Length: 375
Image 1 (cartoon, rainbow, N blue to C red):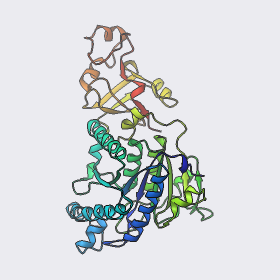
Image 2: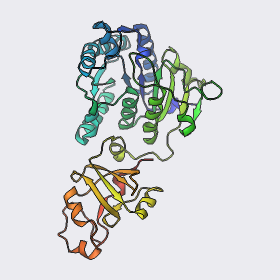
Image 3: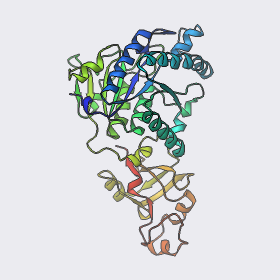
Image 4: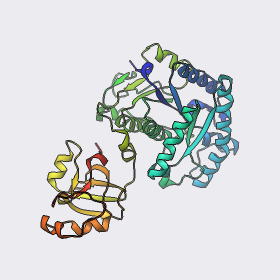
């Protein structure tokens, strides 16, 4: 059973296939139905954040395009045309319930830079405190390939993580995770996403959408690490949340991790881009495979990249396998000066201002409190 009744904050992601009835045709009746369900949830004391697709599809219709454009500038033009229409409709449909909507448009860079990440978190918190429903979408108008989320499934999981939501609901035109390799039925409960569960995923062939079940499972893994339960179900069911509140068995529910990442490390956990790589010795690598460990200078074999203290780096074993990500205490030049040195030689180096360790061979390069295991 999905513990929706105990949730205090949830993220609802609605796909293009749910919100539109065709290219450029917004299904206003369905959005109205979802707004009624949002009001029901709010009456139960549940705060709601919406991640809404549909801007590109709406723009395609307005510009007379039948296929999702491959050219970035045309895609951005579609988003620019469609986003205003999308937000306007959400506000019109929420207004009869006395609800104010707020538009939040994000790029990957907004979550990579810590100060911008914190600004997003603070904005969401303030909006919810004022009883506003944030309507989040990727800022496709300015997003280039290197700063794109790739799909709104991933975006919704990142929003759920940074907003410390209890549950993430990924709603599309499918009733849940279907066991295509076996029974052909919906898998209602998943404790852990195993390779067998991954094998059930299939891509999407919708001309206005990106991803499919594969992207949904990938997004759910992000949410689970943050201690957020996740649900895949049909966004075309106008009574979906009423049924869930009544404990009906529908859709697919994915349990959160038993030991979620603590809030102060969530920024590290959601980073898809690191500025450097530390290769560690076999003993350090083996320890990291079991639990988070501080990375000491004596355990680092080499470093690559240009980074400053406070940047996120990857920690890898000698074979290049990614073990963890963490914020480094030294810049690359300072770190390079002590790698390979003996304990006595490290003691003899000029003390580094941003390292507080006083033990000869215990220069802490990445503290365990600022480190997140990748797997």
